[in-house]
Length: 130
Image (cartoon, rainbow, N blue to C red; front, top):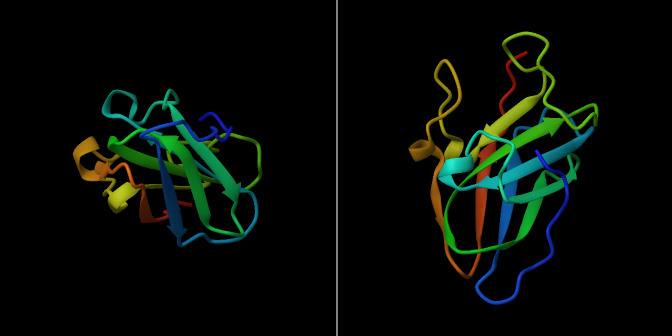
């Protein structure tokens, strides 16, 4: 996941506020990626943001209106990766609309939402597997 906040884009760009609940601690950083369907679950999403885990809110600016899904990672040790020594990650992850993860990552349709030109707030719950 890229880690830089993008500056606001002129005309038709929205701000997306991502409120993350269920963080198990306030250490590290929460990274968020706002993805179109083709890039969902890949590191190639065009819109990114990050914030200290202590705040639990990430704002991504300059996102054009459209249909997206959000994926977040709680990077507790600030090594800029989702630690996964085996199959299950040791750090938290979550998806918009609290999309269910059944024996793997969620489906696009379960996480997708429409972002209007006026912007929006998405609330999601961080999940930990270890």
